[in-house]
Length: 171
Ligand code: SF4
Image 1 (cartoon, rainbow, N blue to C red):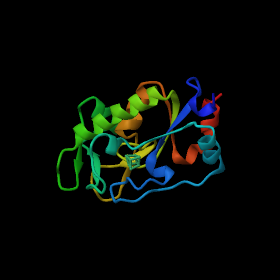
Image 2: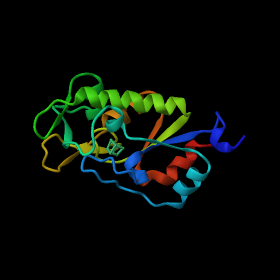
Image 3: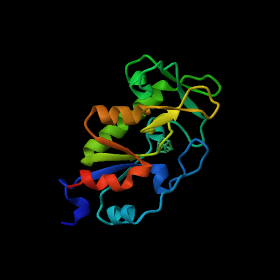
Image 4: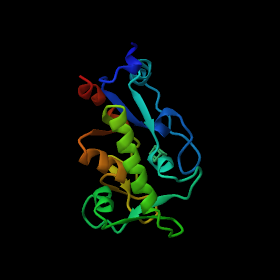
């Protein structure tokens, strides 16, 4: 049986846009080129996920940000029901984002992903920073809703600039 089908292989959940899939709100990708990714791909360790598409949102879609998150972590606040996710037109898309986060978690569990490599800045995938809810391009520290849910459930959650650190969690 090849490595790609071994059930106990530790895998990496990766934001689809980092893998070159054009799933971002603007219909684009944010591909990362790295020999490590190529190796993990060949080993069958990569599990792509776009939480927003998994949650039922289309491509392209309106930009959305976590608003009214207070001083706590934005992604955690959404999971706790104390912050919402709105589009730039004011439409509430919180339910779709939370649904997508749970589908990403289910995918991680299905494929034994123990670490997540996610796109920074996104209200779903942001790992160290997200937009601050003002739609001005400004950022604030904290996680997006998927990053927060994965971390709550024991995954090691890393941003796209921490690719080398992924290896520590595959041993
Ligand atoms: S939700 Fe995550 S995977 Fe999907 S486009 Fe946004 S950053 Fe990329």
